[in-house]
Structure formats: C-alpha cells, structure tokens
Amino acid sequence: MNDIQNQTDLYLLVDEFYKKLLSDDTISYVFTDVVKIKIEEHLPILVTFWSQVILGTGGYANNLTQIHLDIDAKSHLTPALFKVWIGHFNATVDENFEGENAEKIKTQALNLATVLQIKIAQQNTII
Image (tube, rainbow, N blue to C red):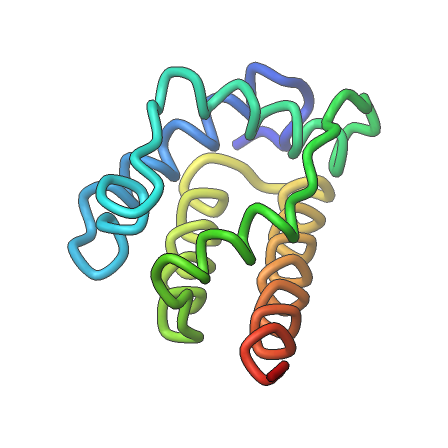
C-alpha cells in the first residue's frame, strides 16, 4: 500500500471519506440537510485544504474555523459527531494508504477536530 503522495491520492481519500459520511445516518444530515453541500463542488475545496496541510501546496484561503462555527449555529456539532467524523476519516486513510503522510494526515485531522470542538465550546459559552 502506498503513502499519500499527491492531489490524486488526496482526491481518492476525500471522495471515499465522504462516501462513508454520507452513508452514515448519524452524521449525514449535517451535510445533506444543514449545509446542503454539493459534493462535486465541495471535494476539490477539501483536496486543496488537505494538500496544503500535508503536501504544503497552499491555495486554501477559507476560514475553516468560522465555517464550522456557522454550521454549529444552525445545528450543534457535538463531540459525538466529531468522534464519528474522525473514525470515518482514520478508517478511510487506513484502508487506502500507509506511511508518513498517512500518519501525518490522521494526526492533523485529530488536531483539527480538537481545535474546532474547543472553538465551538467557547462560542457556545459566550453570553
């Protein structure tokens, strides 16, 4: 099994990951009902994000934290949802890749999930 080496690998990862998310009733509603993503438009954005994180390519300019804070304001993003998210993410990585970048992307995803949960909790405690 190969490591994550390029944007083609990241596209495969993100595509397979979203197939898992969208087929899981415990989390799919966030994407289909709350955010109403258009997956064909969303995937290239996610590939750009992860390419910047893992391959250092740059190009992602959105405010990821604010996006998730806005989603949380519509429908609370609970710790349980983040647990489902990270579980599917890690499983998708492990099913398709192994190596330094595969481990790095799992660590970065966990860091991201942790920071987003902290920011959401902070937002929800401000009066």
